[in-house]
Length: 174
Image (cartoon, rainbow, N blue to C red; front, side, top):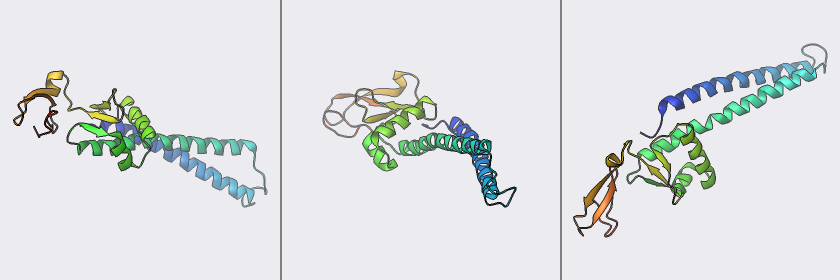
């Protein structure tokens, strides 16, 4: 409900393949340079500067694509935690503790996940950025909320459909 599986899968496959390609090339190039340096291939110490540049380029590209894999995997972790939520509000503090991340970094990663389309039906609560609001997938306000009268105190409450709700006046379960 919160994870766009198609986008995550494509991102993981593309970046995973590129990570493997550049990682393998960097490894082979480093091994070849080691053989050249030790005199196993060619003359001892006969390394050209272009070979070092190619090695560094492969290593940098490997690190770049490897880092790009963390965003879709973090989206998967967040989605799993969102699925267990009952009231539609997820505390950034609790989420940061569960994912073992700093709150500021977690918010930045969450915004990237939403921006890239890996997470859907959720967003940061604009008034209080310490909460993430989860949606129920509805397109209109009428599909997201309903008006309910509390059976305990008789007060009228606007509740989110699909989540457990409590009366905002007497705190009883609706």
